[in-house]
Length: 375
Image (cartoon, rainbow, N blue to C red; front, side):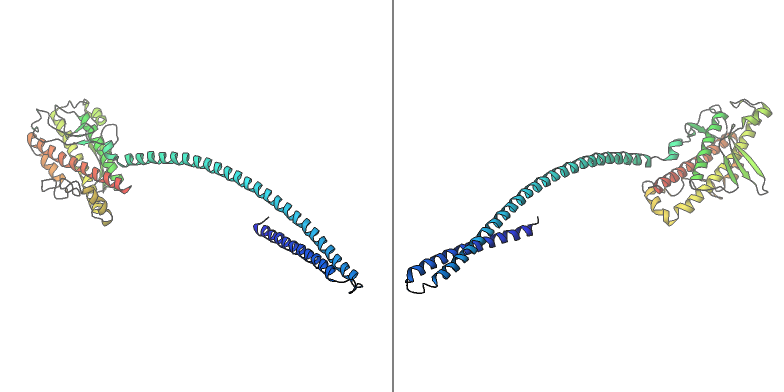
């Protein structure tokens, strides 16, 4: 039962009680009136009308009594209904408490499940975030290839002492063998350098003009060059022992006569020139395409802020300049071949220093660019 219906019933009960009281008052008033009339009326005055008056009053009293009885029964029924409604209200209140208690229990259970899932997700997120930070700080080229530069060139001489070498992954980079280093290590070192150069080119979607790197071979790394006449020339970046064994039966440790040594060294210098040409083209591509493009300047400005002149290679390389020499690498190699042993050793060390230092610089630049580009 609604509250409005309940209020209406209360009003009916109140009205019945008022009417009942009014009826009782009227009965008393009529009784008092009858008694008063009986006392004040003489036996001789309107004796003929007394029975009719009394009868009328008695009839009215009976009607009022019946009305009183009816309203009393109605009041009892209404009180019963009110009692039933109060009982029902208490039952509904208890049911409401049970529902609220059950809802609170369900909410708490769901909250506990949610809290546990949320804690698990937060934990997984923190782990993933740490892994992302750790992965984002990894530089691929630096991880795969470690280039070490010598402190000085003070030990460069006629080959009687072991000079300081440039190294990649612990392997010494040289252009000719000596008492301290054999062709086997030279081959392995330049194969690593060729792999690094090829990966850097691929990372910036660069393909050298008329030159291709073949880093993984059974003998040594190779550089294939397409000449002006469209002929393909393969340069051995080291000494190909498979070819050397079939022709001259040379040993693996470089034990051969001076003429053979000179020939192998000359071929190695030509291959080194092709290698340096690819590096030159790559540096031009990166500096023109990335470092001087406005869309990438913001990234490289953040990269360069800790190192002076980071956006320029350590040594200039172009068609007219190679390091401190006012000539390109091909002309410089031709000059080296004409020098004496002592002077050529110094020049070989210098050209390796220019190329390897610039190779390390360009790999770091591209490595950092890839790292910033993925953020």
